[in-house]
Image 1 (cartoon, rainbow, N blue to C red):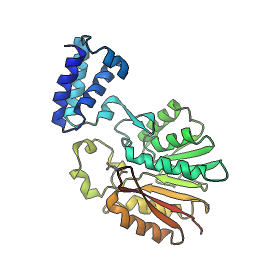
Image 2 (image 1 turned 120 degrees about the vertical axis):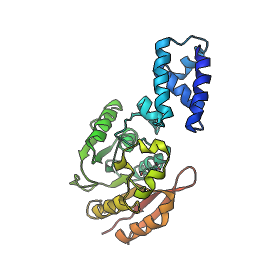
Image 3 (image 1 turned 90 degrees about the vertical axis):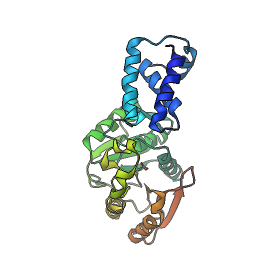
Length: 284
Ligand code: GLN
């Protein structure tokens, strides 16, 4: 079989995963096996595929048919225009989380002073922290996670992206390892209600529970984050965290309970769903 026939056959097979992007996933897996970029792939469509490459591809297709996420199979995920190493120790960064990065970048740029201390709570692969460091050259980021294996991945990513010196990694529960007052606290915490987890698509079952399980109502970690933020966040600062759109009201009420005198807004992602809560004008 040549590359084109392999692409078509693999695309057909991957339809069984229910993925709407079966053909694109087939291309990604084939390019991963061959170690080639898109341009080379389309240039070489008539070239034959060797038996050993075919065998390797078949093994990866079997994993994907078991609904292992594509990005765990390739080991990489694009986020905010950067490529991040991922493994099943970290949540796969979602496109909608780019909203958090965009918002922090504009908050940071609108400040009179460029030097800024930012904490990313529950950093996982480091996607948020590292995207911020790459785009905000004067920012010092502290990225925290409770999982050492997640911090190991974040460490690899901060080195790859050349921001090792401006992204400090700390292990601990939420803000506990932080002994200074950051201007911005950003977080994509676990927020799925515990009881809903097993109902979600099979791919999510491969992701770390600790990154998804938000307790009984999904808000337990957010409650902890807000409570710890009370005496950690700078009085000129802001807190930004991701939510599910169904939590818009409950999360806004929670934010109001902890920060009654602050300005609280709900931010929408690109698909128009409520995706984050921003707390500003923190004065205590
Ligand atoms: N948005 C993610 C999902 O639905 C959940 C991420 C999280 O809990 N932080 O899979």
